[in-house]
Length: 191
Image 1 (cartoon, rainbow, N blue to C red):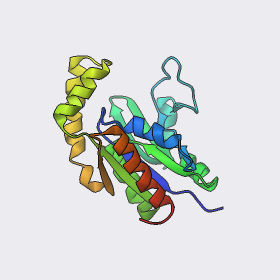
Image 2: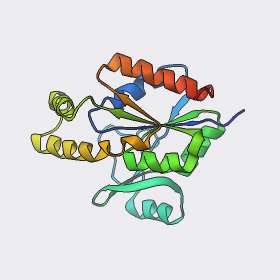
Image 3: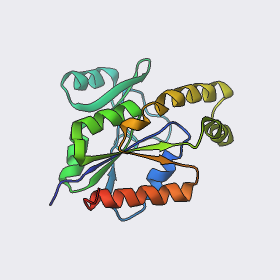
Image 4: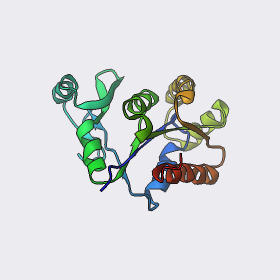
């Protein structure tokens, strides 16, 4: 059985990345989602080993010191997120293609580690104005949080050219089809 490949997704919040990832997981592409680890406690309805690997801060720090993370970052003060190497290797050894939904720094680092074994995709909104409109229509965040997400998005957009492909999501159906086509070609060694 051959080892699986890696497919990395990064995007500003509100770009449609999660919707595209869910679309792909519903296709017959032999994909497995890489579950991230976090140092924060679980929220209501979150399950260890399904939504995240929930680790206390001390355990998370120990794993960082032992080099057990492929990538990790302190996203908010005292709250870290990262990708455990053993999770990735477990899925690859099972012949699955590993799908990552990570921030831009994590995406760049994973690509750097795996080179041609990984396809790094950046999902880009058509514009910052459109992104702001999408975040507002979601109706899940306060105006202050949306403002912070927009500021972060502007920084994240500067990373786009470090990815193998940029998919501009101005039409969700088209973006899903384009992404699926790219992944099928990558899996079949056509790119």
